[in-house]
Image 1: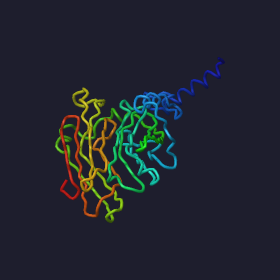
Image 2: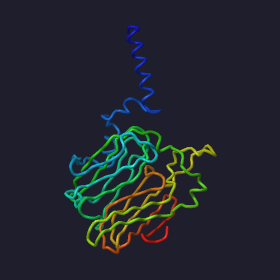
Image 3: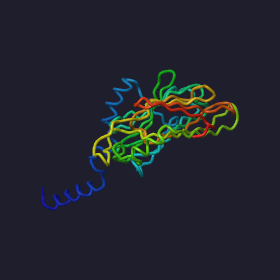
Image 4: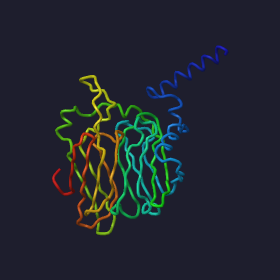
Length: 271
């Protein structure tokens, strides 16, 4: 290799090292890299065919996240597909626990366009995917590439003692126009959702994981969705979603974490 070419090569490597996040390789930052998904797909969905969800299923996320520990995402299902979907799985390919959550829908999930929004942790440059399973056994998938790093090992925004004082508190909002028409609900739950991967700034150790593992939302006694979640849901879990109910029906929420604690709340009740 001639000296000028070698110098150019060295300069290129230096520039790339500045552009990539700590611990990221060129392969990890490549949107064409699907090695992780190949394994996840086999382990989670077996040999199921994945139908391109374009036109029916969309996933919105920032191309470059401002905060890797709190990355907003929104999933939308068009009316043509929404009524057929029984569950939705959110996947982050490169996270230590790639299955973020699975949402199983009930009869109060709503007709017409279906919306689900939440906030997640992203550990490194990765694809984020939404996989929708229909009642007839078909799977639809969409994906988007997100540039972020360190979200799963980021320190909590509050110390453990402060977080413990408000753990389990809920705020539930509803916006239902009239009976029979879809409304928009929001559940905000105070919980540190400890990943087990963040170093405690005081002790220097790793606190054990403790996160919301189950959450259920009902409207007028009918299921909107039930969620099975993991460490990739952000601290203080937040969910916005469409649902159908009568004009006077309230939303009821129950949740449980991996420590065995149970929480509940109802729209219209004091937080």
